[in-house]
Length: 255
Image 1: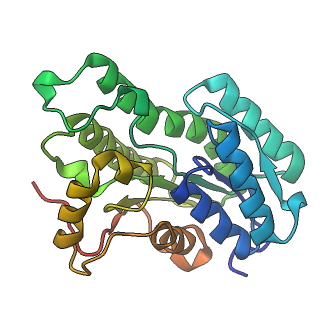
Image 2: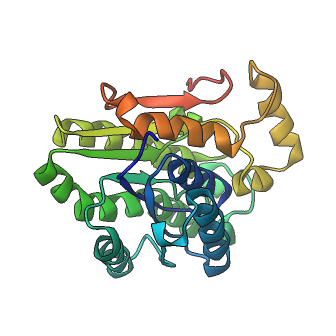
């Protein structure tokens, strides 16, 4: 049980990737504080995590807009009231805000609303959560923080907003690794194309392009991310910090 007696907070736990991460942590003994902006998706995530944990008592689920400070404060308080210290943060929430995304768009044609929404979704939750959780991690001398960047952080035509936001996540990850050293490990996963809602937004033609670019000739599964997250957030990954790890079937970030 690689996470026995640990408490992990997982954002985006109603989505395929966040749910897979939360379930994997629960299978390895962690107690979970999970959140999603959708109450319906969160309820599904809560059921899945409770089943993986073998007990509903090992899960706190609270619908939260992770971009809003007050709601994040309530989430952290609820987790601490139930379990005490939160040692692990897996900040999985990110991607595009669907109401602003209408497919690939060059920067000169992109709306300001889409740009702002993408920046907010990918960067604001980490800002709030690290400020609220890291001080206690430093005081306790132990902590694991995992962010989600993307192989597109080096840039890709048609997604300037997403690439810039994920580059920001990568930079934030490395900065936090320096600022929170030596007792808090901070890393990020840079996924390729994983079977999530972002894949549906890209459409089947673009999905096929990414599949062919992969050396493994397949798209990624949420469990591919979850297994990597488990390694980085457990003591097995204790000598790794400040890294942006591609989990992409061999597609590497490149300009």
